[in-house]
Image 1 (cartoon, helix red, strand yellow):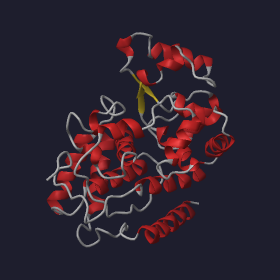
Image 2 (cartoon, helix red, strand yellow):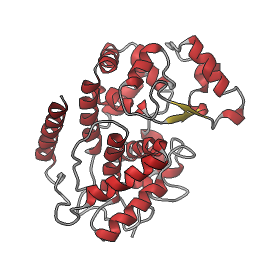
Image 3 (cartoon, one colour):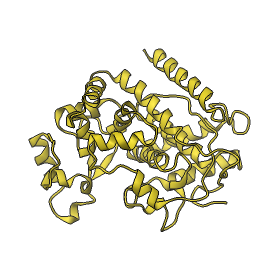
Image 4 (cartoon, helix red, strand yellow):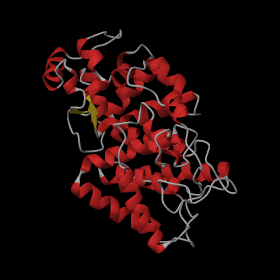
Length: 319
């Protein structure tokens, strides 16, 4: 089954290469042949010291690609830039990890590898390191020269979105309903701030909402109805919170999904989304296949390519 998974992922990549032309899994074969090994070793150290950081790095990848494509714009530091957009401020993290890995890459391959490509590879390595699927990454992106806080505020879906709003949001980025549900499965690892789901606990509830009553009580204990609990952290996956598997979808069927934007996939009234949740909950191999497809599709969102953009030497600022 593992061989079949890798073959299908390779087939999807081959089709992607044909469609995109400039993006290729062998883009750095000559200019930085050790790239994957560099990032792999660094990610292994990250997982050993703090597994949750890998979940944050996967999220960082999503928040980059979902705003004007995978161009490393989220990595640019600045008070008026994407890092301080509402969905990112005091929430997204891992910037220092990306910069540290970039320094390792620059030491061996100066001026060759973009931060955008680095971030895509880090996300893939993190998924695999936590027990998820592996696939070859397509490279050839360039780094943006600017970042848009307003674009981040507009494009990144909040945890209050229902299934219809999520479908529309992903469709606007060229991603299918299947991509959306499968990519939501990245919440099988990581944590959420209480502020992201307190409306489910204390109102106003957003119908339909089917949180397990016992779980509701448990969350209220972890997230009291006071502002001082807003930054408390709760596991997004109640069963295997540091393993990349399909248990997130089991949580949704049990009524123990933390975010409304997660639980709505199972009870929001869209039969296709609900069917996918049931399928992924019972078939991890199918989830992994569709997740890989979704990650490839997201990584191909409007890639910035030469002669546009640049290859930043430091991911937090333009050259």
